[in-house]
Length: 289
Image (cartoon, rainbow, N blue to C red; front, side, top):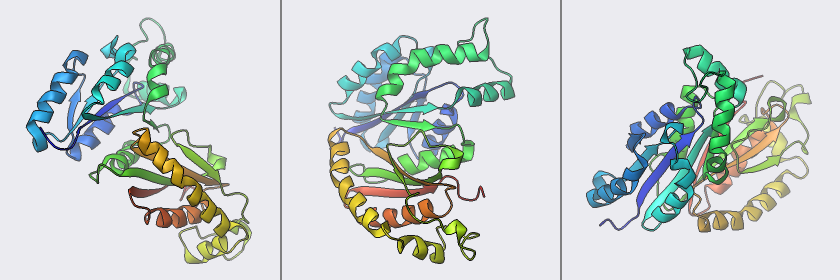
């Protein structure tokens, strides 16, 4: 038997939210992906993979509503597998409007709509998967993501790295475009002066040195970063105790162009010096203005 636990990722979520794209991305990174495996075969697959050792190091099992009663038992199944297995549940979600548009664009019915509408099927699926979403380890909102952006997100979260490390994605965003729903921790940068109103800085962004200097020299900026990163130390430790492998930390400003970008660049540099963290950066709304 291998010295390290077998890694299992259970990939599920709303129909039309991007499971196939996420599964292909995982496969490209070397995961052994199984789609709609009968739930009763999950444990035998883990045992087979453990016996194979390094030949099958990481498994992603994809499940959807066709798995029927499996979802009612999923929480107990995951709990029983955790002994000797590193298990994570990933849930893909999107708004109703986005899902309806996607189904209409491919001219396919929702698997649960029956004689009703696509929206009827979506509502029925949300009810059926509500408990699974509640205890998922990772929730990825794909509403504003195309297939390439979703693949990038999956790659950032699950690419090969030290499996004992906590993977942290630090993301900037603009409140004017809506708050992200797939984050664990959120902070607001709007307490700082906005470089947008400075004639020589408005056209630049937080990755430019002049904007970064303006933001970081503002009253309260350095104190915020110092205190915020210090406050996160017990959070990282707690997430590890709870067996959480992936965390998204978001910082927002008005447009997601200046203050939040500068702070994300600074805090990500600080977090890369923290042992046990694998840090990646995403600027959600940079380039929209």
